[in-house]
Length: 133
Image 1 (cartoon, rainbow, N blue to C red):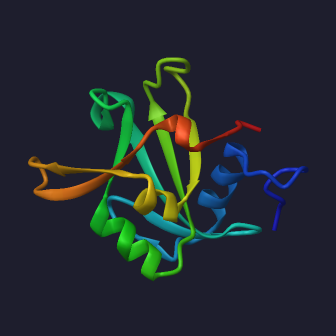
Image 2: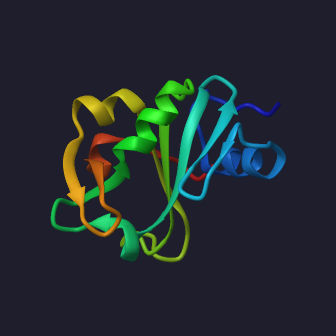
């Protein structure tokens, strides 16, 4: 398996390689769980800025139920990939990684009426940006 990067950090190019060559452990509409070298199981969710970013708080929200299920399955990291629309990079993907535990400890709760579910929210600044290469 290819290394995440030479310095051991995760890179978006490497994640794309994983997505193309590896079957996810869990494959749901809202998220996937992959086994990634040096990181273990990671929860991956694809987002679009215009549809999924909660501008009022400046946060990404993820279903509390999905995060708890992923944690129960052994996921230790959360990866959010903004496919398009991020203000500083509107035409190419931008990604962040965080410990799944951060969502439960520092995440801000919000009831989302549209899907009738509790969400946990974190700001991108509270996560580590994943470099492109």
